[in-house]
Image (cartoon, rainbow, N blue to C red; front, side, top):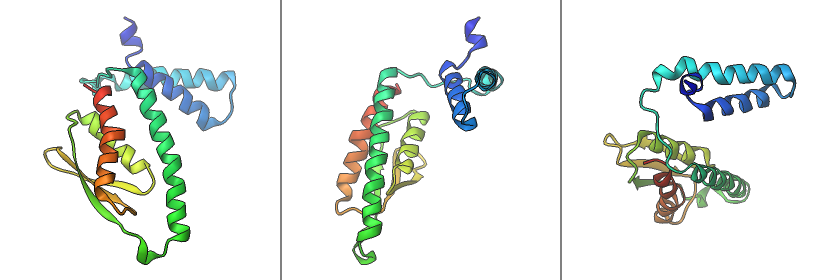
Length: 163
């Protein structure tokens, strides 16, 4: 019964938080409206989620989010330094092909989004079989290191989160 009322509890909580952040004012009315949206949107969209992804280790999700946030901060500084102080002739952009061990569509989507959100890299294309992702790197001397970094920092953690 509770599963029918709150089919996606994490989405409900996130919608409430996002609503409060969007209105930028914490009032009882905003909390009630955010809670209503957090409950209503998942109920109405539940039929479109027949095969919900299963998260194996929820605390690994928190670890992953913290790692990504840290990487975004560091990458912002690195990209700013590249743009401000490196002459265009010395910027070495590379396309990096990253072979994937992930099989879950949700995990691959999270990985592609993570790569794109991190300044200095963009996930450009996923192979037809989902076995490789093409990543553009703004500046690197070692494309193999970029590949290994993506596999070690992100893909390894996503394999633990998604079955």
